[in-house]
Length: 333
Ligand SMILES: Cc1cc2nc3c(=O)[nH]c(=O)nc-3n(C[C@H](O)[C@H](O)[C@H](O)COP(=O)(O)OP(=O)(O)OC[C@H]3O[C@@H](n4cnc5c(N)ncnc54)[C@H](O)[C@@H]3O)c2cc1C
Image (cartoon, rainbow, N blue to C red; front, top):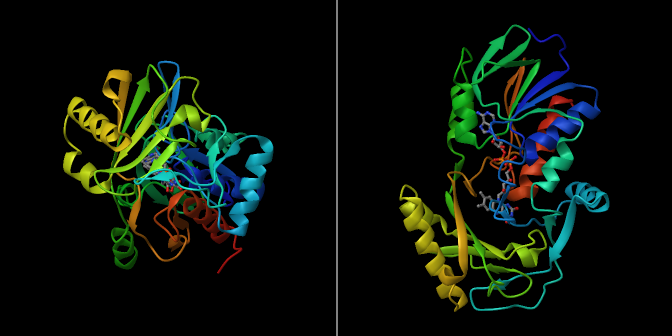
């Protein structure tokens, strides 16, 4: 039983879960954040190998909303984030800056979630597998056998995962909520990370934003300012990712290196020292829920949030987490 009605279990330590958790904790709530990952950040992910650092999920983010802008100003002044550029090359070649800042984490995207997680009770390596409604709240059981209890439950994982979790125990989600949640969909993304023995041919400021098939993006993490050694991240387009998702790592890696070399007009294979592949089953949202969060139960509260609600991307996920906290704190109707 939760000892305190002003308490919440947050499943997911991505940007939405962490921002929500901070808002709740600042309002005096007891908050427990569970994440199945080894570290925090979810799709704001940075991986290190061979002395290099790679952002392999989100590459950069932009700011349109004033509330998010104020938060980002805080990250910039605390050194958790930095401006990367004011625009990137596209498939046709370099473009002039458009004056609109693109931000990155200071030492990679995870710098931001790591900054947000400070002072919170975040339990990583804890995969939530069962949710049970108890009289005055919720009990979440993890694969490890550990449990967390709270008066409220906030589910922030990609919606198909949150939906499965919500239905894993004794709680019966209403048909209306279930249908709305089932309408939220995502594209997959195959991401190759390649450590190079020489600077990459990616043009300044270190990104080619193709937004097409078979490639979506090629980023140079050294030019970006997060890696001491030259290395690139290659994102396949959603169609290509879906078609090749289950193939073996070697063939996906070779294919994406060769497609990137073709795009850049330079040899990448001979410069490649070591590679790694990330398979993102849920990357970009293709169909979102209109509202910035979904309240499935008022008493005890069960709220769904994340980039599947309201606007997409890092900014949308951040605003969704804030909206969920507002709802739990009774700040918004
Ligand atoms: C390849 C790729 C490229 C992208 N590029 C950009 C970009 O350039 N710009 C941009 O703005 N956005 C980009 N995005 C999207 C952006 O990363 C996301 O919109 C945003 O980070 C989502 O945050 P979130 O908090 O909603 O979800 P997530 O970051 O997915 O966080 C959810 C968390 O829940 C955890 N979780 C899931 N299930 C469980 C469970 N059962 N138990 C415990 N924990 C669980 C996960 O481990 C994860 O940490 C990209 C995404 C990908 C994958």
